[in-house]
Figure (cartoon, rainbow, N blue to C red):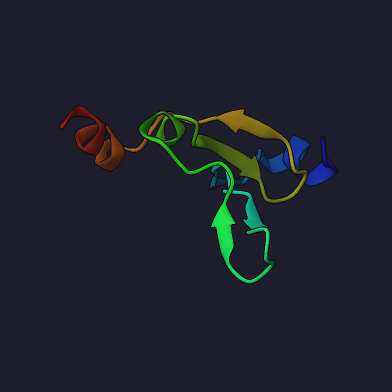
Length: 73
């Protein structure tokens, strides 16, 4: 923990981490194709977390309300 975090508390900033598709070429080496195309299950793999701007510690954050409505429809 940073000295300033112990004095003033953490400064939390919202972050997300989403899985990235892997890109490969075809056998002729001309066209890029995703080797693992994203599926609906990958949308649930998005990680929402808060990171302290000063010391870099992380904590899990709830899914934003906008994404909760999108996931329910």
